[in-house]
Length: 107
Image (cartoon, rainbow, N blue to C red):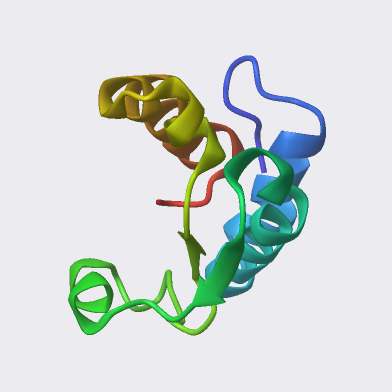
């Protein structure tokens, strides 16, 4: 498997070894690590199953649905920023781009 230009290191190997061959596992692993490691920033979270609407919108081979969604109950970042635009542009969109582009885990 050949690396895309400028790609190397741990994130590249995560995509090669997990995200491409085992997309359901990679998505669940990503959800679990996010739940476990990011509550200090986001606040209390739970792992939930994808809703029927979300499952219908996502290719079934990419998402098993179970435990694939991190639900943030009250986001500390949003509360401190006090602005939904800051939340979306400084946190949500960059995080989704990172998972999609660097880790190979579609959001």
